[in-house]
Length: 200
Image (cartoon, rainbow, N blue to C red; front, side):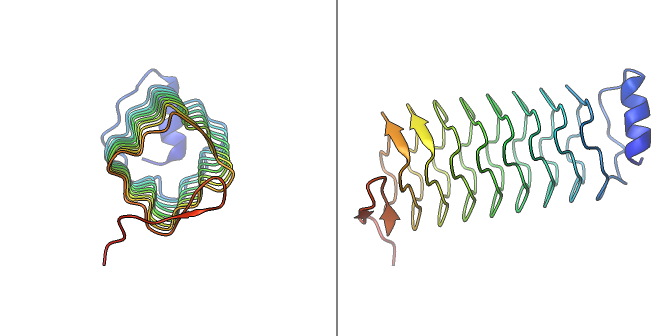
């Protein structure tokens, strides 16, 4: 099933798709696919710029190098997805479930992750500059080498997170919980370096 067939079947009222096998590198910019289910689909290198993907179920899908810039992903289920090297900048991820997702080297710059679930995510070397992370849960996530300069964080949970080499320079923090987090060469908002649990 290619992108055009997906559009036709969605327009006809279908929402659950289990036979997706030909959407690699498809261009579906600006499309409305609210509440669609593409569990475990191979969506690598797909382009969904400015798409309306509110409430979608992409759990377990492969979105490697996907273009999701400016997309609406409010309350999307992205649990267990592979979003490594994906471009998700300027997107809306309010209330999204991204538990256990792989976001290595993903670009989330200026994205809104208010109340998002990022538990156990791999965010190593991800670009999170100027993201909104208010009330987000990032417990036990891997943020090794992640760039969070200028991020906005209040009542954010980073319990047990690996913050090795993470950069929080000029991040705006209020009531951020770092219980049991790993600090090693971690740049804090004021530019100071925090070490404490460097692993050999």
